[in-house]
Amino acid sequence: MEAGTGEQWLIDFTNAYREVSPDTILAHAPQAPYFSPTYYKNGGYGTVDSAVGQHIDFYFMQYYNQGSTKYDSYSELFTKTTQGAFPGTSVKEIASRGVPLQKLVVGKPITTGDATNTGWVAQTDLGAWGVTAFD
Image (cartoon, rainbow, N blue to C red; front, side, top):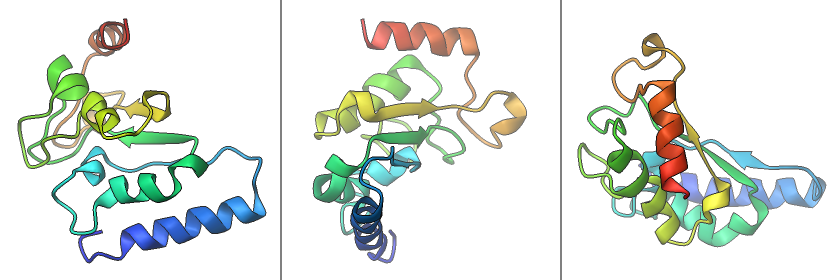
């Protein structure tokens, strides 16, 4: 995506996959920063979703190991990402740009050892945040 070719590859792949397998579940697993509206010169996953989002059933979002973007509080994960290199990539910010909430699956590491630099959240906190976010 940094080179500006990833979006078209994903669009072409998604279209080709749907041609040969129209009735299966198709999920993509981007890191949340790939939905950054300003970081990728051809729009990142916003461009992919606009072009072929109707063919993608779920986005399994990686909300960990993103350098200085921590996604380690309710606000940073669900409402407004402000810290680090990738602002505008919280769940609700991505949804506000047209990606249906029911397609966004939050991925977090299970143990602190799985989060090599950022993003670990206690399971009880994450569960409570999920309930709060969608009440």
